[in-house]
Length: 610
Ligand code: M6R
Image (cartoon, rainbow, N blue to C red; front, side):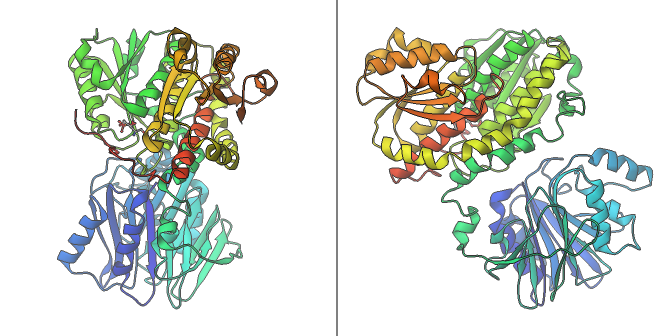
């Protein structure tokens, strides 16, 4: 996720681009830059850091008097977040300038072709191939050159491009990643999202997939990839600025819950080969050592630890390697038995959690192989690891983890299957079937999100509940733990996550009328056992809410007071769908209680103290 802004018109472009970028900072903030026309051609100013740093540099240099330009705020996916990798990017001549949001999946192949033709690359980004591809077509009109690039580039991308031969033209293109045009009087705007230009105009055009848009001060033309004109309806924006920044959602957390299908699709992008098997190029260098490991440790904190719990079930089942999991703050103090044949997986969305970093550094000192799972490119965890798998969920602003958790689960599923492939512990047909299940997750999570109105009604009914247990077995156990954590941290309700079979060993003494028990029962070999445990809770007066894989309603009717159905799919993989109703339940209970879900009390998004 990154933010793109463009402006062409009579006003000072940079003075429009910078506030536009600041409004898109929620989309990424590891580096930023602008390009604008000046007397001698197009100038680029960019740097690592936030928009405010760029603004200060521009102010020091004197704000240029340009009438058109493009800008970018970056959330790194390819290449570390430094100044060289910051956008805009340019071709060899400096005449073609590009900003990009998304991932060009075949960029390595395109780059190899361009390098063979003599192009020299300055950055490590996938984006730069676009500038060099357009450089190859100096005689071709910019709109057409961009159409040709779009035909060759695979993956999700939104582009804004300018060329020094035409100081009145910006060209945008879109597939998968968002792009909107703001229509003004004698001026026009481009943006990844409406806040980029909302203070200047309320008229907008949504650019559809596989469309190219040419904007000049007086005109906006939209074409398909064959150059045929396409009618693009103008809409009036009714949101205020704050609503627009949250995409019309009431809070960032709600927005992030709804972003999960896209976030999961981004996690998967380019990581499944044409043969239907997992393809993790990130692990190529560590491959030899991964073959030799004889034990796995997974360390993490909070929600990321619940992903670690899930990883234990999946990796042990698929690779037959023993897996130990540890809350990161406990790991190094218990003196774990580690050596060079141990694989240590550190999970941290921020990649900066001190306890997790200390745990992986401890493991490094013992010579173990380190794999990181992080949402932040070039985070401290990423730098520490021998190999890192980025979850690509985009920035998460709400303090409670949602989309970073579901994408961690998917990333860990990929790692588990990759290890099974490398070690030959599963037959390929079985792996291909599981991968197909993973591929269906974005659509299945989308289906779960359609039930939000029903869960909202339920949440209103349950909003006054003060004692809640979340129960599950096997892969549903980490989901239960996560459901309890969500309810605790944003709704301030005392909630316990338990292995369903463990209740009878003590906690069942707490069950009485007025206690809510949320059971999670996906399509697994232990579903029947979970339902029996729920019957035990019901018999003692608890109210039962079941998150249940579809197709099993009849088995559950006698134990459940409320049922939320989730799509059925392969065991362990489809637990991803069952956590979403629990996120929504916590969110709606917190909202019904009038709490600030984005900033719960006493919490910080990243915990950098021990
Ligand atoms: O950035 P990390 O994934 O390392 O963060 C770990 C925990 O601090 C985090 O998951 C925390 O539990 C969240 N508040 C969960 O919503």
